Image (cartoon, rainbow, N blue to C red):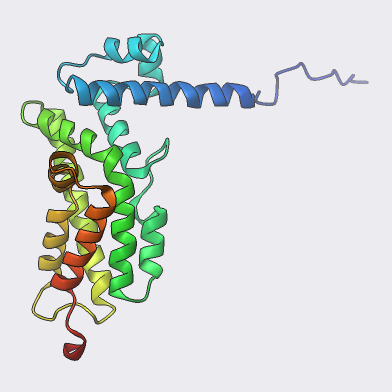
Length: 224
């Protein structure tokens, strides 16, 4: 007769500790926060992984294990600045994009989109400009800059097509022209010029962009 021995502790099941998960999340956040501050203050090229580890108060190996090498740090800092969370979120899954696509009028779509833009830019603009500066001399940064710029352009064409479906856009503007106009004004550079350099409030910036896009992109009611 075969005896059934009790299963040893830890065998046949995976140990799960909520506290350990929380600590891992907190460590990753500390690493990304440190990287963000250093990239913005010192510049990407002047910042080392050792600098990030020192500011985050972790070991260098922890930075590598938690996020990765310096290019991975820059990517994650940028992606989390865009998403506003600890993880990258695809554009179509962001809350304001979901609400914008559900709106039925172009005016409402513009207002929802700009409100999301105003929430994102304070955390995104400094990182985005740090990436732009690094891209001028660093090949991996240049590749990331090109990728992000291409994604932005693609998302703007989708935004233009979404507004076109309402029947409210000007007929004399193509979707590519609408996308380019939006692309030129929704970037961190434009935010920095008006909010950072000229001292506009975020609310004033948002109201201005809504007004410009509404006047410039939408057809007069009698022309629809």
